[in-house]
Amino acid sequence: YGVRAERDIYVTLLNAAVKANNKTVVEQALDYFKRYSIPYDSISYLCLLQWYSRTDQLAEVEKVWQLTKHYSQYLTCQIVTAMLSIIHKHKLGRAKLDEVLETMKRNNIAFDAIIYRELFYIYTDLDDMNSFTTLYKQYLSALSRGEVEDHELIWPHIINMYSLWRPRT
Image (cartoon, rainbow, N blue to C red; front, side, top):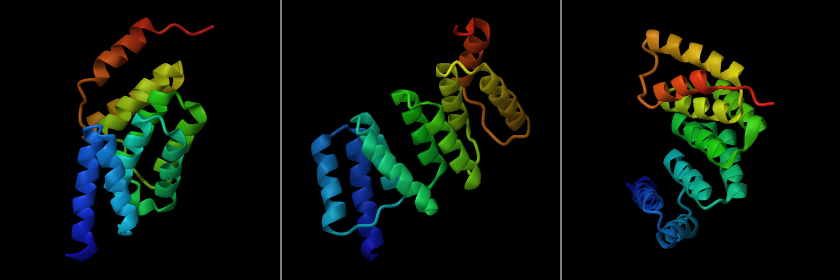
């Protein structure tokens, strides 16, 4: 059991505190990680990204992102999805998006439906119809090959983008 069992308990505590948006318990859990030298894993890094985004601590988001990039064993589809959500929520722009997409490619992280959804949102925010259209074709192709699940929230967004899109001047 040892550290692994302890880490799982503290990760569960951190995850629950983040989901409950309980600042006191999040801070307590992070203190436990530090005090007992509990190593982080991909789930705890994901919790940190979510918490720091929710509390507008973008410098901390960047630190966690750089750590997961450096220690790629912690870089998961869920971490990438969190980063895409953060890019969308905080309007971090094209450069950060390109960095995340390049990191995905370099680490062979496959697109899932949630990643597609977040990218559709971001390309809409960026008013980038070319990237949106390319992504749409990629999504349809992945769907036809069974590489990705259909996601109910994607279709209304695609319809809206195609029907309402007007180039910004």
